[in-house]
Picture 1 (cartoon, rainbow, N blue to C red):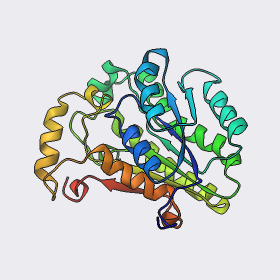
Picture 2: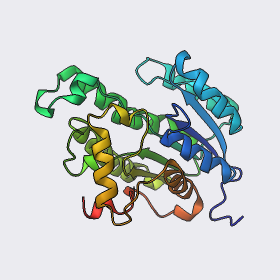
Picture 3: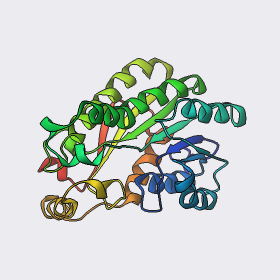
Picture 4: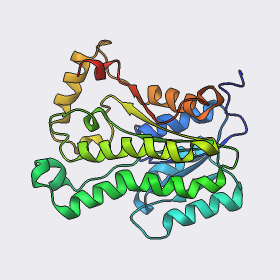
Length: 257
């Protein structure tokens, strides 16, 4: 295996697997295939029964809970990584949330509490993870998060998550600038629409899928394995000079959408 693309010996954290259709799972599978050792999180006891078998199938060395809304749980997760590994080479953040009523309504009508929760879970949690990962990356590393085209252009029915993803992408740029001197790269992966549990909460999502496939130059939807291939690349040495950017994995939809 070419060292530029091999992840053998690298240790990484994947946050956001809900089931085997999750973007985070597609990324974890690709990262593992390239040789990485993984730490994988589950949201709560209810989700653990779905996530743990997947994590065990991937040979995850660390399987821990992480609900970013619960005080101290993120810190406990990083403490476990520190005790077990003492370092971290990459991190994939693939979580987002907005209350249903706020998500389905107009952006102008969203509640203050709903917007704050969406911003905290979907954006600020990545900043918090970057801060906790920093001391575990003395020799550099790769921080990745998952965005969407609706953070750049208005996408019908994406509503309040548009501003939230816009904030996430700009956070990527500022984190890349601040952590760059330490060799820590920060990037976002922006897939086209996928049938995931999280996406199912978007109103009239089937219509969005149809339009994406129709308008994308490749005239097809992407899969979680496509996202995984990009994540594996960004985690490796071949991407050592790529930082502060958003990589689109959407069949070219972003150039016409």
